[in-house]
Image (cartoon, rainbow, N blue to C red; front, side):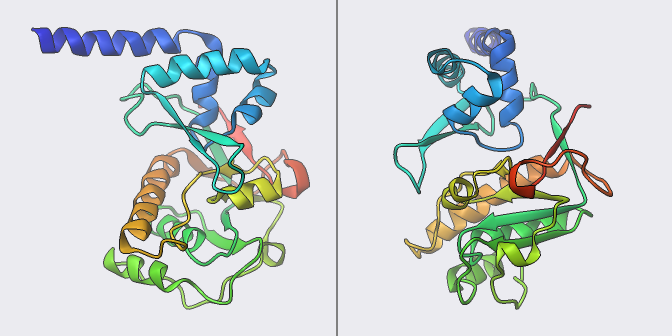
Length: 240
């Protein structure tokens, strides 16, 4: 009985946290990707102290978490916790003709993300880097193989060479996201290359796989996207 009561209390607290329209909107915005408090402030048209209050409420209930940017330690990103909503999540979605995963070097995270996407969705996926490396990281290749996946035998590609105005762009590293400064979706995933360990690459792989599993159900195919975001990297939200 105590266990059942505790469970009910937890659920009630989460419902209470989500009962505020602003907090529910924050959860909607975070369904597809991570955002900084400043980005949330801009999208909500709300002062920073009020955004901070709402984030504190959601964080106390385990619905969101915050962590520092790898690129700029003064910046943090807010993300939905995997079990934070427990079936209560919003139905936000996106439409895409093609998905473009971007990181700085296009040597690990974006390569893994594109390949995992191709295996789970009929919507095409490609990857690119803002400053591409000469080759795919050996740790990324090894990690993919451990999970039964073969990365394509291609050199990392430059974002400028393959980006299309109709792509749904997802940045998978903080540096690329902050460099582009666009309305692209963002997944704040730590770079496994500096550590170079199996554990670091496996952690990145698992987080990317989790994100893709959650997003593929929310993205529908389209021939083109009506609303371009800044610098020609479009994202078209949908309601369902």
